[in-house]
Image (cartoon, rainbow, N blue to C red):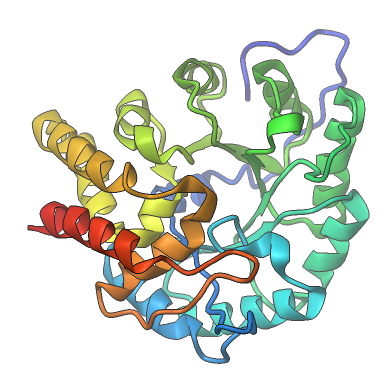
Amino acid sequence: MCSHFVTSSQQERKMPQNNHADLKAKLRGVLPPIAMPFNEQGELVKGGLKPQIDFIIDSGASAIVVGGSTGEGHTLSDEEFKQAMTEAYDANRGRVPFVAGLIVNSTRQAIARVKLLEGLKLDALQVTPVHYLFKPDADATVRHFREIYDATGIPILIYNVIPWNYLSLELMSRIMEEVPGVVGMKQSSGDLKAVSDLLLSCPDKIIVSGVDALLYPGFALGCQGAISALTSAVPSVVHKMFTAVEQNDHRTARDLHFRLAKLWNTLPHDNLPACVKYIQSLQGVPLFQPRPPMQPVSEALKREIKQAFDQLMS
């Protein structure tokens, strides 16, 4: 349980008998978000997920996350969401834990989307705070995650990424204290102090990094893994860096950090899904497109990315 930031007046809820310790052991290391295989018209390509999922698992992934930001989950209709989740689930074949991403605008929408996946064994949900424009207060935010868990019974990782609805350290700790089904947090701000404070105050929770520029510092502090664009683009390298930190080989980990930084600094962050797909294609995955109005990687940018990629992989 979280040890700080929770007042005595807040109601405590009894943890379920299964405290999800087994899930914490499984969601460790490289947890890549799966990119969506769109064609030039922005349509999902049937069968396009399997080669990518095989590549990612063969590269050392400990789990896969489907429907997140790199996966352009915010663009998927309910029908497409169900199609993509089902195809990814079948392609995974139970090899690694399966996390379903929910980028939602309401509690009702989150619950409805999970119901679309009835029959699939989901290990966890990655759920954003509501993401459009308006911001519920703290009590309503706690209630949002509690109702999702109560309705689904599936462990929740909060994806703390929405700039205008960014959850404070106090609120994150409160949610994880009051909602037993919230088993952890993906922290996507560059604030390493918040990461450190979460690790300090919630040692039994799953704290993973979503900050590509700071994966190594996050691992060194104790983040038990990462869900980020680079984990999808170059999973084998991030896996090697995570393993080096676990083995206390910080010289190797720092070297990989700076080599990854050179690649990261070539990527325009407003068009990351397209860049991830291009980098995957350099490793044998079929090249698919981002969903319009996002644009494919230009030929000039391809040359810049490939140069940094070749240096990283040499």
